[in-house]
Length: 256
Image (cartoon, rainbow, N blue to C red):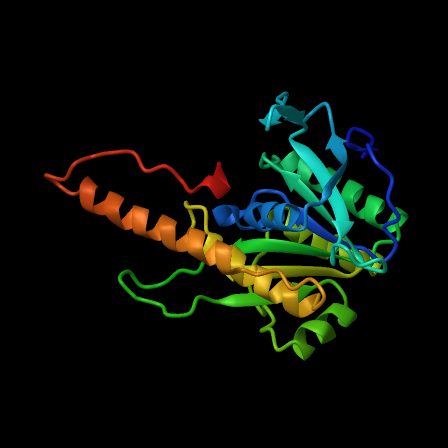
């Protein structure tokens, strides 16, 4: 799509690199995963994706302006000379349906031009359950675009998503990856529909550690953030009952 382009700020040899897609999803799962990887691995800003149809905003962080869609890269194992590379595309805006195919095509074209190995798309999964039913372990699945991805998922003991719909960028990435015979992993973690879900993101990080053993990211901080948010929401619910004191509930810093 000519209207969507990628501009490099910094060149890096990305042959056999892992690419992670971090456009906002249900429960902001993909965004949390992407931010966490960029922060923990201290990845460098490599460039931006831009279009006349993208939001006309600048994201300000630490006194610096950033594009609403950008990508970062660096070593999966910082400090190791022969470390594999990882690239993370990160966005603050949910693209409208009219842009999804263009974004997906541009992203996969770029990944293939740079001879990247495969792409991982984290996604939240909404599961309809009877009201009041308590669940100890929320569902987690994976699905892939190629037979090679399917075999990898099975070898890692990850349940394969068998029936249902995957919409938006992850769904199109799977379809386009299959058409191109390019490996796309979509990892689905059951999540809240209307709340940032760090717990679902932590479970995806655990799956990514299984797929990329050398990465070894510690999901504990995400679980801690999830516990903080859950306790705040419980307190908010108490205060929202008749006679309770009403107040606003700020989100943990990870989501700010």
